[in-house]
Length: 453
Image (tube, rainbow, N blue to C red; front, side, top):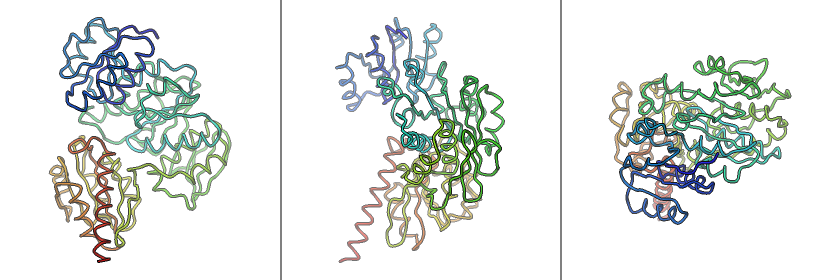
């Protein structure tokens, strides 16, 4: 691909790496970023030193002059005036993922999507393949733009793909594509659940006959989508014994794809994996890649889990604190609640993504003794959980941690599982989770000082 002049919209990590990739491949690059503050200017200076023109503030239509292509960062809506104008002028508009893919040559791309569990599955697949001796890199929505990896690619690239990225793909077509699950999410952007499903599954149509689609047999939305692809379909299931695929049978993971084998689930810490879907999907992908049983077994039992995904933060006087800040939708909260047997004090809230919190009612009534609400969406959550007793509102995570500890008894868990995005108060879910951890740490120190003195 020989691009001489390009416009990149959005100066997040994806945008910056897209601009650098284009510049290194000989393009004249302009990067537009709507923000114009001190921190943004600092980042802009770094890019200007690399020969990239950076324009901060509102996007004038003059940015499109003489441009062959516009590359859109995932967080930028595709309906902003500048992008509409680019399309009217016949300028190609693609996403960062699409751009990076066009610069790859002969790499095996494994793409994983789903509403929940993507990051865990990506990292687990990479761990298994690495143990088997493959050279692997991870990229995508996990926080490492594919444009960065495309500059020095490995033979295998495992990519986490989001619905925002999938909106703007054209040629992107992995060798292995997996759909973990689909539940309502990002409806504030996609407008309807049907549109969200369409975006999430659009890669199925792009797969070729020698490619693989790894699909969740238990998901009633995903199962019928198998008809959309020419690829070889491999299912995984928690509930059903499969003639070909990966499934749970008692206390064993049974794989029957390239080789047939069974791995005992005894002493396998499920909290490290978010859910069985992630484990079964990872085993299926690894089996398609002809990884042997022992490498899969070792990776499963040595996998440590990811930060902010049911992460055990600490214990204070018998009260357990768990960071599940990555749970940014209702489906993720439901999956997390399934992992707990003892009483939960649940901290929820943030910015609304169009979720239906009423779906939490049955699980909350069984497992949650108190809900602590914070952030922009606390009023909506409270309204949709009408009939649920013991709801409290607070102004911050600091207050939520302290109220949670005060109301908890020994053996209870205080769980941050927000069910919302973090952008009302934080840069991202990581910052939100780190604030939660820090407040737990401070509380622990305060409690221990009182005990000592």
